[in-house]
Structure formats: C-alpha cells, structure tokens
Length: 217
Ligand SMILES: Cc1cc2nc3c(=O)[nH]c(=O)nc-3n(C[C@H](O)[C@H](O)[C@H](O)COP(=O)(O)O)c2cc1C
Image 1: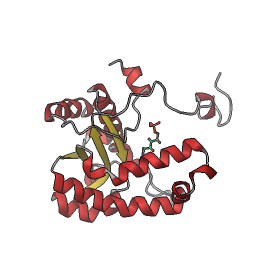
Image 2: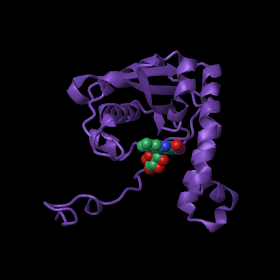
Image 3: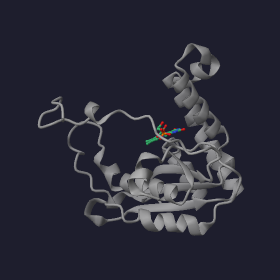
Image 4: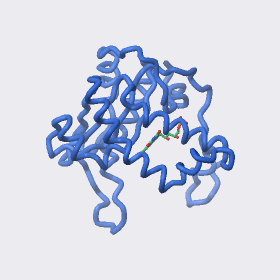
C-alpha cells in the first residue's frame, strides 16, 4: 500500500469480523513499526499481543468503567439516550465507540502497548504545566504500528482508556513495574468497507507561516 494513501486512510476501526489474525501479520507490522523514532533511540516500547478469550474479557471489564465515566463527563451518555437532539455525525461516533467498548472481548486481537519509563526522554517536566514530551518516545511507534496494520489490511482502534487501570492490567498480563501503559489497540479484519476519506481539518487551520496565526500560503 502506498505510504501517503495509508496515512490518509487509516481510520479507527470499531467493527471486526471473527476471522482470526495470524501472528505472522502482527509480527510483520511490528517489524515495520519498530523503525519509529524515540528520544535517544532508546526504543522503550513493549507490546503484549493478547488473543486469549479470558484475558480479552478481563481487559473489557477493566475498560468499561472508564468508558462509562467518559460517556458521563463528555455528554456522550446524553447522546446515546436522546440521539435525535444532537449532531448526527457526533452521535454516530459515540454509538460506534460504545459498540466497540461493549464488544471489546470479541475484538480478535488486543495489543497492549507499554513503555519503559526509564527510556522516556522528558524535556518539559519543569514547566509547571501538563507534561507531554514523554509520550513522544512511544506514540510515533504506536502510529507506525497503526499504519503498518493498515498496510496488512487489518483494522485497528487505538484507545487510552485502559491506562488508568494500569495496576490491574499489570497484574493480569504480568507486566513489570518499570513499564507504564501507553495505549490499547484492538485489531482484526475490518467488518466494513474502508472509508475513502477521513474527516480532518484543513492545513490552513493549524499551520502558520513565521508567526502563529499568519496564513501559510
Ligand atoms: C489518544 C486517543 C484516544 C482515543 N480514545 C478512544 C476511545 O476511548 N474510544 C474510541 O472509540 N476511540 C478512541 N480514539 C479514536 C478516535 O476517536 C479517532 O482517532 C477519531 O475519532 C478519528 O477517527 P477516524 O480516524 O476514524 O476518522 C482515540 C484516539 C486517540 C489518538
């Protein structure tokens, strides 16, 4: 698959067939994803491939309370209760995300992505604001992985709602304390057609010339 096409058309897949995903496809995708950059080239990412039905159900049980809380504080619960009163595109997304959350145990493969805390290059911890730089040593890998999975013809959904359940996930998957949870990726054969284009803001809304706000022509 062409690189630019993959970048432009790797949607969040939330419905999957029950067809099993061979490990060879996952290993190939991981083998490409590992070329991602990381601070000092420390490559602190770790990935656990979970296919066991009992563990997938356990991960769903850990995910759902956080999903439900998210629905409550973002107003998503209101959208699900009274869909007619809201923007149909937003409602569709919340409905799909809710379907994904409730059906998480049936998603054929769960990739649990962690990172060795010691390997994170964090340059913004003294700024007195939310630190974001640590994630830059693992999320390029996650995005590479999403693109590589797309290249394999597999659908994927990256979420972060499992991260607050890190302690329980650690116990379930026997992850050592030095590894922090970074993302969960549900993977399988997509049950729907691939979209032709994704809804994204145009370049002019986020890229500027020389000074913030100055149009880039
Ligand atoms: C950090 C992060 C957290 C996300 N969390 C969720 C989530 O909890 N549930 C979900 O269904 N999708 C989640 N997503 C997927 C986004 O909803 C998705 O990327 C966005 O709606 C664009 O969808 P599209 O690529 O299909 O157009 C998350 C994505 C990111 C990058």
